[in-house]
Length: 161
Image 1: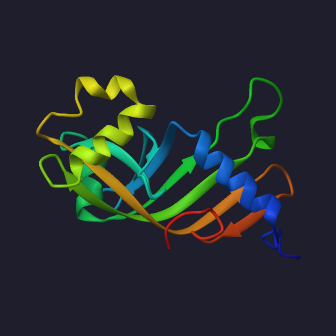
Image 2 (image 1 turned 180 degrees about the vertical axis):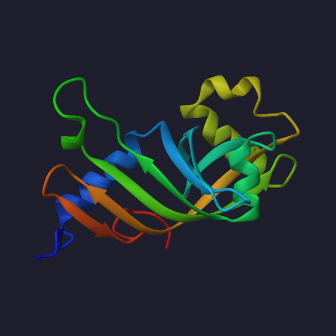
Image 3 (image 1 turned 90 degrees about the vertical axis):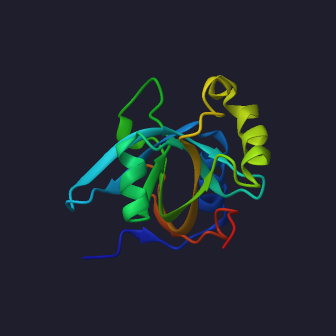
């Protein structure tokens, strides 16, 4: 069987970067304490340096899972209004989460940046149980549609390495 993964090229890099730029939410996959997988929909943003992030509450199951095991995966890219959903591009990031809690030095600067794209978060971004989960990306898997599969590095996607 031939390898279905194509060599990463500039078109794949551009597609991945566009998906990251457009994304306002993502599917977040975590491993629960009992070893079971779980997927949640989360708001998706980027720190000023481009690092993917989301705003999380300590009350959320996925937050506890990430604190126990920071290995996770995020998927961005949504199907368009027409056609087979599997023909639309999507990008999966393999990452490790780390947290900046409300009250830490860099939280306010991240909050101001985050609110530009997620203004409704103003209602709860100041709650004491909220933190930013930042994702250090280890690899990307781009499916640009049928027959268009690529593996990417953080650098390929314009993310901090």
